[in-house]
Image (cartoon, rainbow, N blue to C red; front, side, top):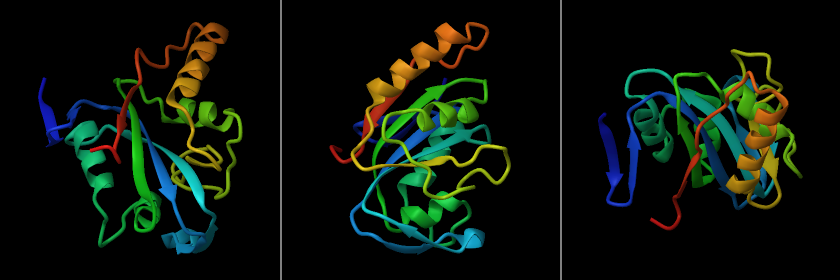
Length: 169
């Protein structure tokens, strides 16, 4: 198993998986989000759900998100130009979990969809971006996974969700 090192404190496997970026936006304003157009964003936290099944897996995708893209490709690249990543929640899995994780995020206390279709142009999800006034908790998200497993035992969402604190690096 190969491991990608971003710095001495952050190592992420090159395996496939699902992740959530916890972003913090310090100023309200309009952001041009490509084909979605000019979108109003308010101060607060945003949780973005994505998956990494291409070359380089999680390590390559997370590395992409940690830098600011000069030529945005995905909706999240536009938001990243204004918002900082504070945490990354992820799991390595061959299962595509991003739609289940988006559903779980939408059910968390105080989660709001503020941009319909954000990050979800290739699926039926309402959005893959969720707004929180205060930073969401990875442990509350984990509680949601546990609850989901009990109600749908045939669906195994993940073994464990790892969390990386970015602003402490």
